[in-house]
Structure formats: C-alpha cells, structure tokens
Image (cartoon, rainbow over all chains, first blue to last red; front, side, top):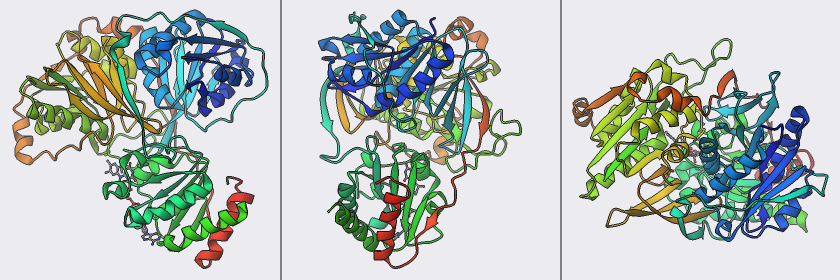
Length: 327
Length: 264
Ligand SMILES: Cc1cc2nc3c(=O)[nH]c(=O)nc-3n(C[C@H](O)[C@H](O)[C@H](O)COP(=O)(O)OP(=O)(O)OC[C@H]3O[C@@H](n4cnc5c(N)ncnc54)[C@H](O)[C@@H]3O)c2cc1C
C-alpha cells in the first residue's frame, strides 16, 4: 500500500457529478496527513471535459479508464475497472461519492479487492495509528458514530454529497491511462433503457434546493403551487409519504426513511408535520424552512425558519417575492 | 427455481435512540425490533413470485442474528417463505457488514439459489453493503434499488426497473442474480395470526460458526471496521419564527433566506 488517496470521480457523459469535486476536499486533507498524494480516477466512454474539470481541483495525478463498453454506468464493468485502478495505485484510502453510483459500486469493489468499507460518511480523519477513522450518521440521523478501519488493508469510504465544499486550485496533474480488461461475465447486465423520471423537473437527490409538500396539499392539482415556487428557485419538488401514498406525487419524489435521503442547501417543508420517518430523510439539510398551520407541528423543532400559516397563501406570496427580486 | 430472501431485524423507526454511557453502542434494552422495511419489500416479492409461477420450487428466508432475531424470520415464514436459515453465534455479532456477506456467501454458495432478494439497506446502520457485497462474493450480478421485477417466462433471466439519480434504468440480467429492493417494489402483506402460528411449524435450520465451513478464513480477508464513540446528533440552534400575515411573512422569509442564510 502507498500513502495515496484515490478519489473515484463520478461522471456521466463526460460531465462530473458535483459530489466528485466535493470529495477531493477531504481527500487532500487526508493526503496531507498520510504524506501521499490525491489520485483521481475517472471511468467512462469519452473522457475529456471531466478530466479537465477534475484537474482544476488540485489533485496530484489522474488515472483514466476509457472504453466504449464503459460509456454508460454498469456495476460489473465499473467494478472491474475500479478494482484494476486500485490494484495499480495501491492507495491507502479510496473515496467515492455516496450517490446511487457510489453506493452501488463501493461494496462490490470492497469485496473484490479485500478492503474495508464505510458508507455515507460525513467526516474523515487519520488516527494516531495512521488508519482511517470516519464519522457517519446512524439510526436515521438520530445518532452518529465513529468507524475505525483496520490498518492492513485499503479503506474505502463513500462520502455524503453536499458535506464538503468543492475543491479548487491546481492544474497540470500527471495523467495516466489504464486499459479496461473485461472480466468474465462483465457483460451480464444489459441496460435496455434509461427513462428520465418526473419529466423536466430535477430529482431531489440532485438538487441544491428542495420544496416539499405534504398531505396538506390535498391533491395533485394543488401541488402546482409547490412546483411554481420550485421553478423560481431552480429547485426540485419533494413530498411526504402521506402525499405520495395519496397519489398526489410519484414515490420517486418521496423524502424520508423509505424514500430518498437528501442533504440540500435549503429544504422547504410545506404542510408536512415532521414525522420521525420524514425527518430521517432530510435532517441533514443545511437550512430548513417549515410552513405549517399548526404551531405545535414537530417540524418546527428542526426548522431554522418557520411560518405558522396557511401554505395556500404563504407559498404563492413567496413565489411572487422571489420573482419580483429576480426582476 | 430456488429463491432466497435475506431478512434483517432493526429497531422500529419510531424508537427513541439512547446512547450507552461511554458511547460504545446504543441502549438495546426495551427497544422494539421489527423487520427492516426494505427487507419487507423483498419478502413480499419472493412470496408473490412463488404464488404466480409454477417453476418456483421454494422460498428460503435467511437471517444473521441472536435468538431474538428469530422473530423476524418467523414473520417472513408467516408471510409465505417455506423454510428458514438462522445464523446464530456470538462470533457473528462481531462481524462487520462485509464480513457478514462473506459468512452468508459461505452458507448459500452451494445452495443452488437462482434469485436472492434483500432490501436496499437496513434502516439502523443505513449502510447497504450486504447485498452488493454478497453478489460480488458469489460472482453473480446484482441490480440495486429495484422498483419492478419481471422474470422471463423461461425462468432464465429477468427485466428489472431500478431507481437511479433523476431517472429509472431498465436492465436485463440472466439468473442467478441478486436484487436489492427499494420502496415501490411491493408492500408486504400483514402476517395474520393463524399464519404466524403455522410459521412456528416451518423448518428453521440454526447454524453456528462451527457449522460454516471456512468461516474464519472467509471473514479474515476483508472488512473489519469497528464502530465506536456513538453520539447524539448535533443540536440545531432554535429556529426563527416569522410572525405576521402571510404576505409580509413570506416577504420577510425570502429576505432572510437571501440576506441572512444566503441560500437563495
Ligand atoms: C416504516 C415507516 C416508514 C415511513 N417512511 C416515510 C418516508 O419515507 N417519508 C415520509 O414522509 N413519511 C414516512 N412515513 C410516514 C410518516 O410516519 C408520516 O405518516 C408522514 O410523514 C406524514 O406525512 P405529512 O406530514 O404529509 O402528513 P400529516 O402528518 O398529516 O401532516 C400534515 C401537516 O399539514 C399541516 N397543514 C394542514 N393544512 C395546512 C395548510 N393549509 N397550510 C399549512 N399546513 C397545513 C398540518 O398541520 C400537519 O402538520 C413512514 C412510516 C413508517 C411506519
């Protein structure tokens, strides 16, 4: 093992995932402690813009694995490619973003290369023995714990998006390419179709701002006022389980324990009571706003800003104000 | 076709989590334990396959955990699984998730399972390692965060719809394979009291460390993370309530979000 920190820089169609830039930030801090360098790894079809973008974050080296078979994400092929990069770089620590891709890939790669793994981490350090030690939320955010890694094998961690700022500064990193050598059976997963969910609206896991509606919206039709504010803020639309179960919104928008976990910069909860299972999915948001007619609603305990009032009046007034300020 | 469904027992989502003095773990006493909600979707899917298809020979439910985890296994049997495997040994409590995957792989690798179903993650540790890691160790493909599953008429492959960021992906995969279940796949039926009684008579094989060939070797070469220093979540400072009529309050909120919080 070297002292290097390998970063899996997730990209689709030669465009980096924002979280890829973010995880370089803790990677640099770890490398400063281990005395190694940060090595970025990109896996995909054609890789140009994504490589240039990661070079601007100040990584020490860039390894690319590019092949037509890697143009779209495929668990087995990407596993083979990332395991090959780990074999070549021999990093002490590997960081992935805790996105759908990173969460899918991390355990497979860890099992393949005989590493140890922690997922969805929010803080990373190197302890006195020189091993990785991280913090991650557990029990739906009702607690957090440290996770210590063994010394004698690579440590892999997937890092929660929007936890660290995007890294900047640098350029001219050493570049290296590695060929993709398919493993037997890598082609077993055949992607037939990728259907954009929810039409033109952003997905909650991709958005910096989320406007969420609950049972109080009362109908799919009424969600229009949520979409209008979301549009002005360039936000995604989320929903509580009660709103999804009632058919007001598809389950792909559900936020919470059995829905999606989100960590946006701003989360606006409208007519959502704040049940513990809803909080499980959004308590990691930076700023939380609650709009609810019941001043006792539990959501207010978590909110940074609150309005006790009728969302059918407050939301349109917010939309109008944001629109006015944009001129 | 043989189907395996992996079940985990977790604290009920409404449980108040208290941390032990010293922070080495959470308080376990008095915590209500339930079947992991994502595993419920997997159980129901397995049982529905058996009900709808003549070529499904059996559905086996497997759990790793102490004697009390047998209750979760019984729920799976009451819902319709045919038999159970309970991996129960103090040595198993010390395994991390990757090592648990190695343990389970050692137990099921020669079982002839064509389809393995498991929830996409556990709601206690939220880590989601077991499914994909198990698939890797068995050298079979997995499809994560699955919301729809259709097995081909010949029982040799399936088409699955899975949730990814902002999109849904449709994939075709040959069996044997592993599926991790997401919300939307199906909702578990309520296990009726008579079925819970009948479930007590269904066969459950209890395996100890000594019964699992190569247990020590399989779990020695990967994983090994250790949780410590549990803490309550950081306190959020008290929020600001904005008084007044809807219109001025809305205006003031937008101003605060721009000028104070600087998020819009
Ligand atoms: C295993 C399990 C998993 C679960 N997973 C999830 C999950 O992933 N996500 C999730 O959201 N829930 C989940 N739940 C359900 C959760 O317990 C709640 O039932 C749900 O979150 C309630 O949704 P709600 O807040 O929209 O509805 P309610 O609790 O009915 O709240 C509606 C709120 O709207 C307010 N209101 C009414 N009219 C107005 C108005 N005109 N203006 C402003 N406010 C108004 C009311 O005061 C109330 O607070 C789960 C439950 C279980 C048991």
